[in-house]
Every structure is written in structure tokens, then in C-alpha cells.
Image (cartoon, rainbow over all chains, first blue to last red; front, side, top):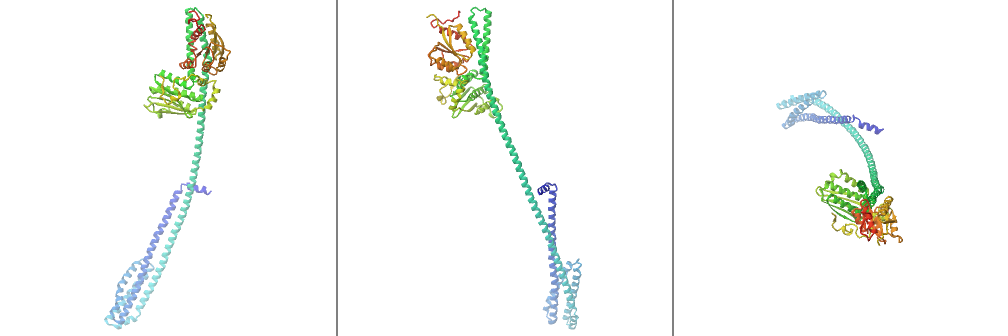
Length: 496
Length: 137
């Protein structure tokens, strides 16, 4: 509940104005306390001066009276010194005090009385001294005997004491006012400090709550992101798997179609061809018209056979299944060289690959050569195939005009499909090219371990007879390329 | 000597239709007799290596149901017997080179060289005669 309240306060639109008002209030309290205290202290100083003047006045009057008495008794002039000195001091103190108490209803009458009495006393002193100087003893003695001087002094003393006690009361009052102001100011500062501390703690709490909320939000976001990422990973893997499956299915379907075409359609066409040959030979004397029809029939059958062959070759290179990868690549390279007029060098050594990978290599070289013919404007091409440790490396390099791999690679479907095929059999494709510097397409595919080769080839022998047959061949070098051991070291042979 | 003995043929061909057409065509147009046939590599090799079997000419297709005509050629080299020719749909230059390297005497294309095969059989059957086709010119 406290948290709810505090958060409501924290969020309220009045928070800022309230804070500002509280701060201004405290500033006002301390400022006015400061002004008041300063004034009070200044007042205290002036009261001390006033006290000093009152006391000085009294003392100087006493000194003057003493001097007068000494002079009267001894007749020596030096006794008059305090009396003479007193005149100036009396004038100054009386002036100050009258100015100070001018508008004071309490102290004003008292100071007036003091001033009047002091003047009367001064006059009395002056008269007696004058009488003495003139030698009129009886007159100054009589003056002294009137007792008037004593009465005046008594009255002055009384008034002075009253004034001093009034001043003391006022000082006490002033002091009290300063204390009050100071304690009020202290309370205000204390309260503000406490409120500020509370606000600070509240603020800190709010900040930490906010922090916790932000951390929580960030955590939730991260969790969401992780989830999405793993989702994307899963989907990508699924898509890769699916695409790979489709690729395999496509190759199998092509292979199946090719076999079907060869076995069924091929046999029919060949049988028809035999029949036409027999017809030609068995009937000794043909009319020119029948002979012509027969020739036409023979031509039609030949066209059918050529068409069937071309379709089968496109679907699945017969050389690959009949003669093995190395020979198939040689044939492909030679046919490309004849077709395109380019110089094609080959540098091939025997490799062990899965059936899938063999087709991949074959198609990769096919696609690369097609691209060279279409875009590269090259004059020579090198096709290489070697085993590198546990991997088989195949590359097609041309000396054509090349291209910017960053710009072209994504948009060219041939390269994307090529990369895809290679990755689907666990390989890596690399395209290196620079404008004006030719293009090299390389792929590394996992080689079959020898044990796996033996195991996988006995059941696969039905569909893949060529490698075992070629391996069993007694002929020393069935291919026109140099032996594998030397071919890696020597420069590739030109086959054109 | 002038009496021609029928030439004993062994045919390796996985298509029954082609086998029958070929047998009919050859037996009709040349003095030959088909003494055996096989549809795959292993049974062909078994027949060829069987001591009791005698043959003058083996006609081998490259592309078989199982195994390959190339394997048959390689094995036939060890068998005592007559000539070996390849009769295939894939008579490309490579296939020809390969087959000749494996001991084939001739390679004929199934679609375009049937007449040549028939003439070749006829010549083999009459070794002393002048190379003359069986049919009248």
C-alpha cells in the first residue's frame, strides 16, 4: 500500500510544484531569520554604545564635581582639569543620547530629564567656580549649603539607573527575539532536511524499482529474442533439410526417368531400328517408292533415338554412371572445349565420394563451365579434382574478366544453387573473383573413408557399376590424363 | 573349308526385346547361331568362364541391369574364346577407347551401326571368303 501511495505521489503532476513551494518556503524562512537576526544584533551593538554613553555621562559629571570640590578646598588650578575636560565629553554624550532616543516614548523623557539636570548641575558648578575665582567665599559656600547640587546628582543617578535598567530589559528582549528567530530557522532547516532526506530515499527507491522493472523488461526481451533466434535456427535447419531432400529426390527422379527412358523407350526404338534394317536387307527388290518410305522411316527412328539420348544425357550423365566421376569430368571438359573453342586443361586424380557428392561435383563443373561460356569471355579454363586429407577438392578456374563477388553472388541463381548443392552434401563452396582477374570456383566435399567405400559399393553396385569395373580393368591407363601421383605435381595437360 | 559353320554367338543384353530382335536379325541375315545370353554382368561372366561353353563371338552391351559390360569384357579377357565386340547406345569416343583398352575387338553403335555388326558377323563366319555381304548386292 505504501508503495502504491508513494508511486502515486511520485507520478503526480503536483510533485514538482509542491517541491518548489517547499523549497521557496524554507528559503523565505531562513532569509527573514537572517535579516531579523542581523537587525537585532545591530540593535544590541547600539544599545551597548548607549549604555557606555550613559555611564560616561554619569562618571564625567562625578569627575567634574570632584574637581570642583578639590579646587574649592585647595584653590589649586590643576583640580579644575577634570571639570574642564568634562565639558566636551558631556556635550558629545548628551548629543548622541538625545539623537538616539529622539523618538523613544519611554527613554525620551528620562534622557530629557538627565540632560536638563546635567545642565543645571553644570551651571551650578560653573557658578561656584566663578565665585571662588572672584573671591566671594560666602556666596559659593552658600551655594554648596543649599544642597541643590546633591539633589541634581541624585536625580541624574536615578534617571541613569532607570535608563540602564530599561536598556537591560530591552537587550534581554532583543536577545530573546534572536533566539526565537534562530530556533524557528533551525526548525525549518531541520524539517526541510528531513523532508529532503525522505524525498531522496523515496527517489532512490523509485529509481531502484524502475531499474528492476527495466532489467525485467530487458530480460523478457532477451528471452523473446533467444526464442525467436532458436525458432529461426530450427526453421532454417528444417528448410535446409527439406531442400536437401528435394534435391536428392530430384536427382533420384531424374535417374529413374533416365533409366526408364533407356530401358523401355530405348529398347522399343532399337527394336524398331532392327526391324527396319531387316526389312531393308530381306526384301531384295524394292520399288523405289517403298525404298524411299523405308529410308524415311529409318531417319525418323534415328531422330527418335538421338532425342532420347539427349534427354537421358541431360537427366543423368551416362558417363558418370558408366565410367565414373573422373572420366565423366574429362568427357565433359573435352566436350565443352570442342563446343566453346576454349582451351580446357584438366588435372584430375581419383577420389572417393558418395554418389550424391559425385553428382554434385559433376553438376558444379557443368554449371561453372556454362557460366564461363556465358559471361567470362575467357580463353582458358583449368578443372582440378584432388583428395586433400579427408576432403575432396574440386575447382574450376578461368582467365576471364571476372566480377565483383559482393555484387553478383547474391543475385546469380547459378552460384546460389551451386553453393546450396555443395552445402547439402556437407561441403563448402568458395567463389573467388575480381574484375579483370578471372574467376575460381572451388568446393571441398567430405571424402568417403575407404572402409565406407567398400561397404557402400557392394549394395550400390547395381546402379553404379563403373568404378569397380574400371578398378578391375587390367589396362594400365584407361584415361588420357597422367597418373595421379604425377599429375598433382606436373602442370595440367591440355586436352585440346 | 568352304562350307561355313554357323558362328556361335553369346549375347549380353539386359533388354529382352532387343535381345530377341537382335537374335532374329542376326540369325536371319548372317550364318550365326545364338548359343547363350545373359542380362547382367555376373551371369554373363559365369557363362563365359564355364569350361563346357564354347563361343566364337561375344556381343556385349555396356549398360546392364546389374554390373556393366566393361566388367564382362575385363573378365572375358581371361576366358578362352573368340572375338568380343561391344554393341551399345553409348558408343562415345571414351567408351570406345575404354572398351578397346579392355580387349574389345570392335565397338558398334546400337542405332547407327547395326548393318556393320551384321557384316562383321558374316565376315567372321566365312573367314576364307572375300569380305562379301551375305545378301546379294
